[in-house]
Amino acid sequence: MAEESLVLGRVSGFRGACGEFTVRVVSGDAQRWVHLSRIELGGEVRTVVSARAYRDRLVLKLAGIDDATGAAALRGKDIRAAAEDVPR
Image (tube, rainbow, N blue to C red; front, top):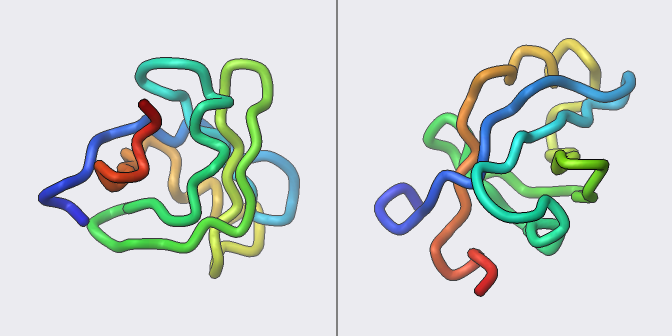
């Protein structure tokens, strides 16, 4: 995905104890990104379990990240989306 992907934002923190984390979206409204089913994180394609907008942030839950510690470790990392998943 890396060759044809765009940075959609950066992990800014975590929410709760179940592994959700917040993403500060680079451009546009966070609501535009809730349709994602996959993202790239650290060069690895990850499955999105859930995505929702909360205020000005995108809240994501990824498969395999199941606690606050795992989510907190992602802070500062860029989140990328495949070019074909970018909303028009």
